[in-house]
Image (tube, rainbow, N blue to C red; front, side, top):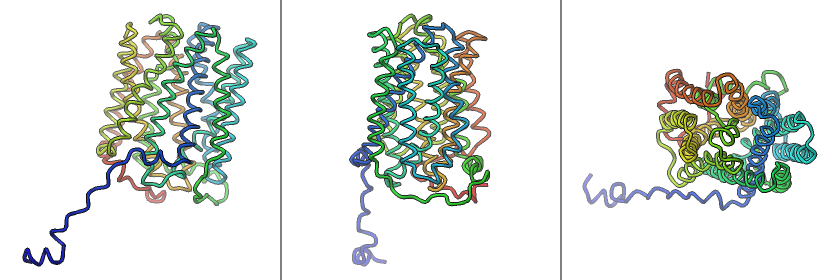
Length: 434
């Protein structure tokens, strides 16, 4: 073909259309999603305030690392027991109604904790209301993750997940700092629980106003097979199983959150205000990373990135465990949070992208179990190990265990090392993942 003929038919000389410009704020202009994010912000701020208040109050009243570890056990037990039934309910019934009901349960628990603290009731009552919080979380987490794809188009889902992470980290920065300030100003934890209850009231109202896109519901008979369908899907989908296992084991071993009151009071000697900043530091790093991810194109080599980020999490844990300098400890926790956020975004995106609509609740329930095992159960593990080998030894050993985990996961699931762009991930067929 001659140059003239090419110009005539336009097949060679017409310029290709420019690639669509990445607009990081497009999803935020959706009022429905904005309400969802606002409610999530309030829930997270209140939860962080409650967490720091519980840790400080229990350690003030017991001086026991094991008692701190029991905080995680009290919350994770109902999550582990109820997450799978909750996910099944999510795939069969009104997700918004169940989501709001979970918020109401957490509101009841917050009011109960405020009363226990105000009247200095026995510490055992704190654990009772923490278990109610755990029941609420068992409903809330699968519903929240399952609802998010029903609020935005699929092409905006990655942006929505990243912004959700960003907003959560804003709350994780402000919540602990605000909680530490309130405790220092009032000399009690009661006001933190009361503020959490106020935030939950507003969150209930916002979530009740959400408009949820209709989706396919699972209409098959309720059997053990349908109840465990989400677990089978995860076990057959290598990328989901690898990333969930990586996050669970790494944070289970490397989490030092439960021991921060000991570091604040006895090792770094920075008091409740310092504890607030220590709790906030990981979220500072996480928020900065989430903001950077929101403004850039999707990660192109997601597999290697998540492996290196979790390895960085382990290194930061070791540095924090050995540090006796408050500023070095803060820096280590900031870097730890930055690494953790990369892992969270990759894992959450894979979970949402790979899950079919009618199974998303049950897959989210399995994700809830993995996350809760790494967070709340990790707090219990940290308390037990700290009692056996000391606080510093428990944190350092956890960091080393995280590094070993990264190597093991990379060897067991080589497909994870080859994972490319998250934007190219397509939904998996439950019947073809075996």
